Amino acid sequence: MESTPMPEPLRRAIHQLVSEAVANCQEVLRYTESDQAHTWKRMTLYRATDAADTMNMVAMLIAAYCQRTGMGRESLETYLQLEQTARPGQGAGRWGLGAPGGLLGEEAPVAASEPGTWASMQFRSGRRHATNAQKVEDDPSRLFTGDVLHGLKARLCDDIASLDSYLPPHVAELAKKVVSVLEEPQPASV
Image (cartoon, rainbow, N blue to C red; front, side):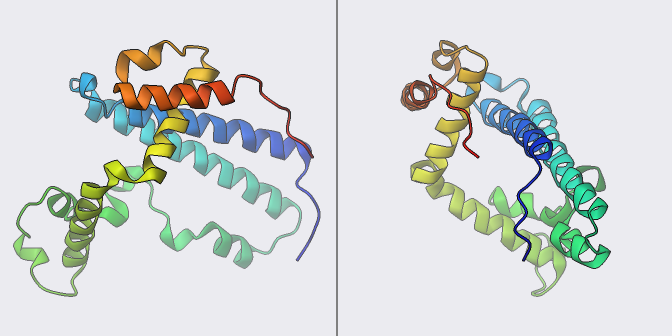
């Protein structure tokens, strides 16, 4: 395995793009709050797509660099996991149309009632996510992720006071703790 470090300009570009994607992820979480009932569908889709597109740019930037420096096409396609990739414009992708029914606790449609079919697998995937979602509110990693994203966005925008205006008090409190840790940004060590 090659041990050449990533070129600094590439590293900086990746950090910038990932920061942008994280900001979009935070907005996805923001638009799930109850005060956003009028706009959640539109804005969660916008921001989730923006985050996915930005992370796709990261992957394509790295791929272009790897290709330029001699990586073989087969290795590149394997690393990009092209067989797993579905673009938002191509429809529901791996979630499929049956997953929301399972997620929302609906009865399985006729197409999903036959075991082993694609529709059945999609429906069961949605049902499994629904079951897991019932427990997720207390999941420390989920809570931590949301708090970090909200705190990071507030710190980057220098708008800590806004946390109180749209987050439940316990989430705002934890996000403010994240902000306090981020008060003095440190340069990355190389």
